Image (cartoon, rainbow, N blue to C red; front, side):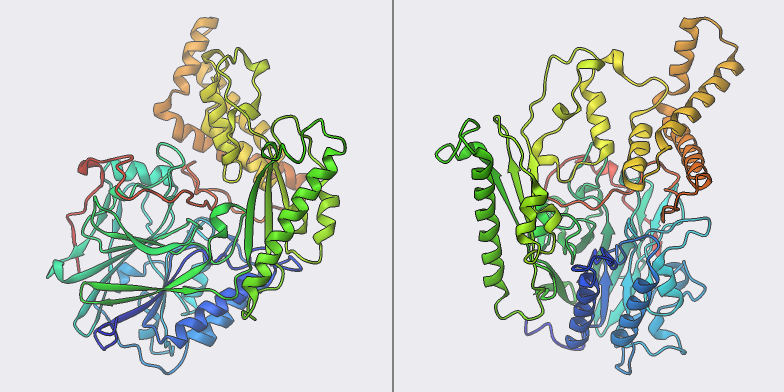
Length: 578
């Protein structure tokens, strides 16, 4: 460590998933993300870092509020502008590296700005580019000279990742970045060798190769993640954003021989086990081809404690037939919550920056004949002691898969869900699981699982009440036009032609057009009714939208070969840059 402290050493502060503005209107938690960003920037200044690297999702909302933008601009100006000299040089073509702005050069080299700590950031799935101009909130900060937004790929057919080449003394660093892209689309592009990572023309082995990515790391479906084996093996360190569990200690991938650091989020955006891991940022030091990562615990993060209780395990205290069993269940849960509050209080001693009220979640498995109790009444006991009094208790019940599902009428959607997955299961995953378990005769014919899943997601997440109805209408109209054009009349021909119209080879494109048409209609209907507009942009045209944030639990296994052991599927780049 002592050797990594001279004019040849890069000092880089690494953080991801800050989610600025999350719950900013909440009376208790509204200031949390702002306090933590302030702590991160203050830490960068105190450690005199060369630059800050952010791995996506700086903002929680795609359209941050005025308060959120004002706070971020104010803090970046306070900590990142100043007279301290920047002691590294950019050697690559900056018009290629920073291609989202009218000022395509690194901000500290702008003669009109006085930057002491440059910030380099890729975008995440929360603050990704949208609209005809393809702009995101990071581009506002980039145009104002406060952030260097890189890693934005404009093409949907081929991705060329050109590194930002830096040199400090004798150390040469190649910074690669790829902003969030829908996982299934990116997976497909890697498999089809449509992703190329360019390398410097000269002295390729003399560069430390650092890659920032914002995708699913843990497997959420056959192609709904990016296997580490897809990434090129010349990389030295991968900074993996999007996953919220803090696994910041670099872990070696034994197959590709690079290291992966997963800083995790700096705020808990869901009450799931992975979010309960203590939050850290990293101070990365690079000299030559050697590196050292120092974990820095965040002091302003609100504490989060989570426990699981299986009522059936407490037979010595009560059973479903025990008199006043509900009161005994409440007493048990009360004792568990008190236990977590006492632990939080002990940890908070000597940490004045830590918020006073912790987040507490008790997951109660009431399988075996137990009934739930009134959670609202229970929560009232802790309204002055916890930050989330409305959702302390989460009931779940163990359900098993049924092998004898006969028809649509007898299918219980709940049977398709494992209790351990409730915390991170998406609506579209539930739809997919339903049709995987259902027999052939109850499969969709005019709609696809993916299209229906997306429509339901719009209904659940954005309250688009007409999303499902309009999707069905659009698909029906499209199929009718197809059948009329084909001139089919018999029932058998109609069935065959309808299936052909929606066969998988064209499903993505058809789904995309129908889905966007349906969502536009649903939005128009909502506005016509005078309902308040949902502050969300239309989703990406690919139909494979970026997922909500997920927690990698358990952590991905090193050296796993899932999704592509063969080298042919990685899209290895042979190109050159600079």
